[in-house]
Length: 207
Image 1 (cartoon, rainbow, N blue to C red):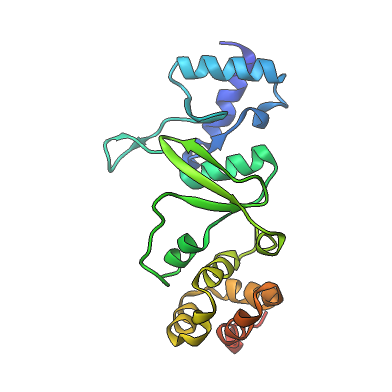
Image 2 (cartoon, rainbow, N blue to C red; image 1 turned 30 degrees about the vertical axis):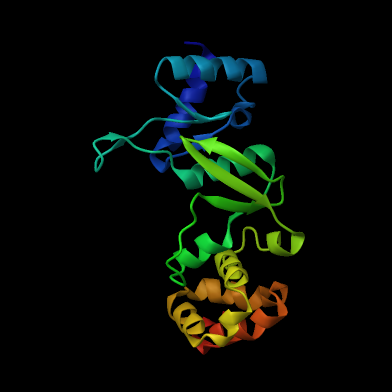
């Protein structure tokens, strides 16, 4: 096996415990793009690396629960796409609301909003949808309170009149997320700002 392949494999193995997903550009400090592509191809053929989508790879891991090869870590795959393509990505509003316990609705397929182009991507046999979102939405990318902003946008103005929404979020959100929401609430739709203030009014969140 070439030195390029060995160095790539070493880097993948060092991160594999976290379910790391990588792309060729993650190894361009090791060799040229052509050399990296050839090394990854050889590693896939040798069964040391798994190709999970176009230009995306991970190291196969065994699931102690499933007693078979573990599925792709979807969050890691999305992070790899964002890193590879130089874009920002966030879960869509329904997924965010579900994760926060504000709805039982589950997206039929994983969907994300992005400042990149709208498209569908195959990852580990699953179709992932990316939908282009406006700058006002993507302004939340990378912020601790991004899921809250996404969930509120999806719920719509009715959320401001539903006492359960404020109660659930006040109870469930960590103080760090509340602080971030308070700091950035001006970037929410006008109807959501009073709701955000009611969620973050607890004195215990003060820095």
